[in-house]
Length: 210
Image 1 (tube, rainbow, N blue to C red):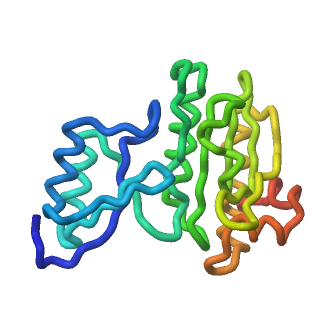
Image 2: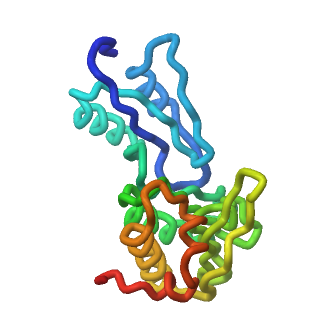
Image 3: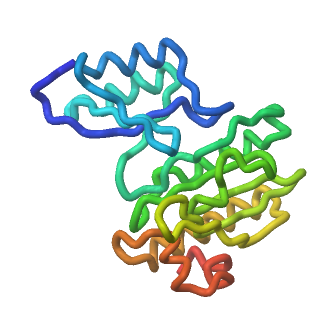
């Protein structure tokens, strides 16, 4: 790996799948961009932070993606979707919905890092009720929670915003929430604090065109 070139940090993971997993080929590819003394930071949101040469960013990301890794920006963006282990199968646990949520919303710029989580059943392994925006599949529909906070003395469970949503209703609601936060959130204002400043129904029905 180049040692003198300026570095940038990116987040990588194995994509949206059955739990947070990496295969041997992916690990070998990641290791190409590390020195022996380097360490990888594993975040609570199933991402690894990797420093790569800034002048080779596009080339490196293309190589990482060629072995099935997903790459994301680090900073004030919607983070890649945290998922549960999908213990009962792709369709039953809603894997296509999770993948589509990630495709639509990961990396959208926001006032402060926003964490989204998804779980395929009420057991809640993906911790949706402790995330900024959490989605829980229940039978063939989806419940959405907002404003959860996992750490600190003021940790709290998220508020059940809507329930029994179809996939399209779910995407629309998440889109409105992120649009409202992007346009009305203060710089570096955490999402749970933002939620406390507004009427919940106002956020749920925010006009994206505003």
